[in-house]
Amino acid sequence: VQLQASGGGLVQAGDSLRLSCACSGGAFNNYALAWFRQAPGKEREFVAAIGFDFLTKYADSAKGRFTISKDNTKKTVYLEMNSLTTDDTAVYYCAARWMFMITTWGRYDYWGQGTQVTVSS
Image (cartoon, rainbow, N blue to C red):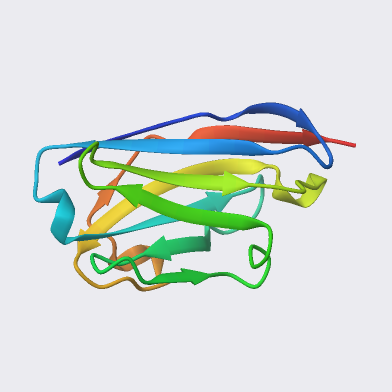
C-alpha cells in the first residue's frame, strides 16, 4: 500500500486549502484513513479520520473548520481546511489502517510522505 499526499502550500490566515491523499494497492474500501500533522518541535497529532463506513472523527482543533472525506472509486481521501490560522502550520500526513479509525498515530500501518502547509499571518 502506498499513500501519496498532495495539496499543501503557503496560504494566508483565513484562507482554505484542500489536501488529497491517493492510495495505490490494498483494499481501499476497507481502510480507515486519517490525517495527522506535525509542527516543528511538536509531536505528531491527530487531525481527522474517516472509517471504512464513512464515519468521521475530528480533533477539537479541527471541528467546524476541517472536513475529511473519501472517494472509494478514486481511492483518495481528502481534507478540506477552512479558516486556517497560523497554528495550522505543519507537515500533514495521511495514514491508513484496517477498517476502524482511531486517533493514535502509532496504530496506523501505512503512511504518506507528508505535505507542508504554511499559514502566514
